[in-house]
Amino acid sequence: FQELMGARLLELQRKLEIKFMGRFYAYPLRSRDLLLGMPPVLMVSSLLSLGRSLVASRFTSARPANAEEAIIALYGRRLYDVMFHEYTERFWGMPVEQISTTFVEQRMPGINAIEKFKQVLSRLGAIGKDGLGKTAVIGSGAMFTTAKGVGPVFEAIAGEVVRLGGEVCTDGALSAVKTEAGRVCAVVHESASGPREIACRALVSTIPLPHLARSFTPLPPAAVLSASSRLTFRALLAVALVVRPKRRLQAMFTYFPDRSFHRLSELGSPVANVSPGGATILLAELTCDVGDA
Image 1 (cartoon, rainbow, N blue to C red):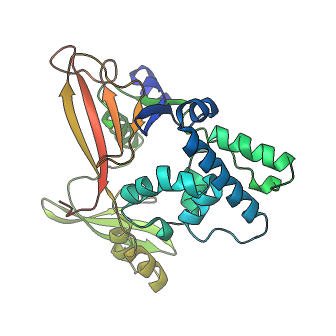
Image 2: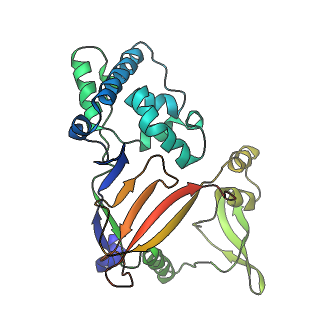
Image 3: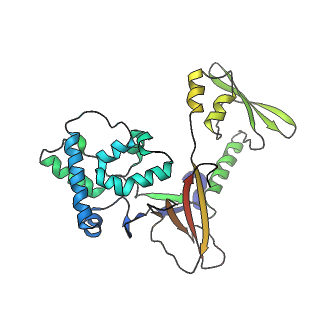
């Protein structure tokens, strides 16, 4: 992206916060925030809950069966109940116990304070080294955009494909993907003049996988069709409010448990040129299913 976009890219620092129990905290949570900001009763009960979870895990080698068990193993039952349970179910639109443990292993951020607590228990021999997690880098590093959002990045990619002799088709529905010897050899799509077939050596598809799988000629194995038919999709709705006169949020993204939306961001110069001058865009994101109220 950087090579393709050059000076058009804007670099942003990925600063994240979470509003928890009426206060804003850096995300992932830092030790000092938990110690100084969390109510003492909640902090003590959370550490005791985590300690019980870690000690119990030492006597079992079974892998967590679902995301709920995996989150509790990472943070303890108390923090799971007050911080992660409601948010995770609202974001994904399904019970946490139906979500794979892979989601937790790849996406859940580590909490510095909890990892330090685990290190103390490990030195005392209460838990093994395999009980130690890793502190995630979800809140570090940079992000990139342009003054017109991410759209110009995709336009530049499409332009490069055309420049190198490829073809970008956006003017009709996919009818069929023809294959020979396990490789794509042609694509058929609807155009203004009727069905159009394009021979190709490679295909990059951006359409939903269930539709793509059903479009192959010949059809893929029954197991592939069955698996693709079970895929479900979660929609993302963005609500933008033009606000003035000053910025209200300190972070790039601020996460909110116990709200209809899951995070807010504030867009102004240099990321977005907002009219009237001096205003910013407050962007609320919420997940939903197609057909929800």
